[in-house]
Amino acid sequence: METQRCDVLVVGGGIMGATLASLLWQLDRTLTVVVVEQLSQLAAESSAAMNNAGTGHAANCELNYTPVAPDGSIPTAKALAINTAFEHSLEFWSALVEQQLLGDPADFIRPVPHLSFVWGEANVAFLQRRYQALSALPPFAEMVWSTDWGQLQDWMPLVMQGRRPDQPLAATRVDRATDIDFGRLSQRLLKGLERQGVAVLRRHQVVKLRRQPAREGQAWQVQVQKPGGDRGLFEATVVFLGAGGGTLPLLQRSQIPEARHYGAFPVSGQWLVCRNPRVIAAHQAKVYGMAPVGAPPMSVPHLDTRWIQGQRALLFGPYAGFTTRFLKQGSLWDLPRSIRPGNLLPCLQAGLENFDLVRYLLGQVVQSMDQRLASLGEFLPEADGADWQLAIAGQRVQLIKQVQGHGRLLMGTEVVSNGDGSLTALLGASPGASTAVQIMVEVVQRSLPQRWASSAWQQRLRQILPSWGEDLAQNPQLLARVRQRNNEILGL
Image 1 (tube, helix red, strand yellow):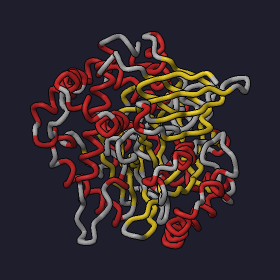
Image 2 (cartoon, helix red, strand yellow):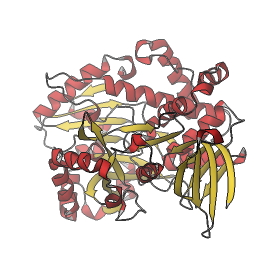
Image 3 (tube, one colour):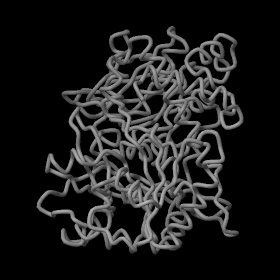
């Protein structure tokens, strides 16, 4: 069997793997990095435009990032953390555009206002408290609040058509916001690396991972099935598993003890896609509402201006559902095969604690088209069902983790690594893509701690991420400089 040695083996050709490989190449071009992707096309699963929310998640409009605390206050720490992480992503992409490694940024990122929109007195009161809490912070100082009928019509004319004048309505708006085609971005990142000599191997499926004895130097042996059915072997010092829904099965094959109590809960998705060019042209915003009770975070309803493969589109959803597949092109056996003695109890505990979620997802599965159009009508009262058709979105695999001896269903992302950091994996879902740079910096810190601590790497990091290590929420002058630079380079 042919053996190839490398410093870092990246499994997965989506936004996470592409970001890690690009970050490592920026920090040290002497590292040998190999990317393997099991599909023939890069970024065809969770990172693809139709499969991904496309929102540059900065906590501008996503109400689930600021839930009401038991005392009635609006915590802002999570929103601030996500906003800062997204600024780091923008900084990184700006650096690559300056180096002429990503081409025209308009091919993957475009300015689109972000709005939160609610109706009903209780929801209006909540949104006002959220606005007051966030707008007092420098990263959200440009957020605008309104209950004015005329202004709301200017912001979202389609949404306001057919509404009663006496209905309590409110919205917040952030103009400096984005739509991102993470599929195109991932492809540009990886194709740029290929031009620099980095190996990006398609149709290479990992079938086995084995920890090497420490004396052999290369920490991991990774066996792959190549096109045509032949097998190849990689010996790598560091392995990163960033295969989206395919990560947990690979992590379990590694047999590291840190993976023992992790499980997964897959959630499928669907969009209503508008096919009427007149309607598409009349809406220019991402308008987020409030999630139904029991719904997972990625099911927050939104009316979404998007660019997919360079074409403007209008989507509503997503509608959640249940499936046993971990990937859109996965197997119905993915979930059953992931159940092991070590995670059986945590999975059962998480299922019992989240019975409302299970019931909600099953209800989504059996929805009729008329029911889906009725939920669209809450956003667009005058929507014509003939203008909309159903499309399949991507898979999301929510993380189940044993916390203090009890299984919990977690809604974010988490980096899992073995004791020496030679194997790391990313589990979980939203808002991963938008915060990819910060997450991959954490992976580098864990996997290559000595190199990370070197003055050369720290100096290089400051060149590509000028605000790294600074608290932008406490430094309005630096925040303004960072945003001005990113706006100018990325056309925001």
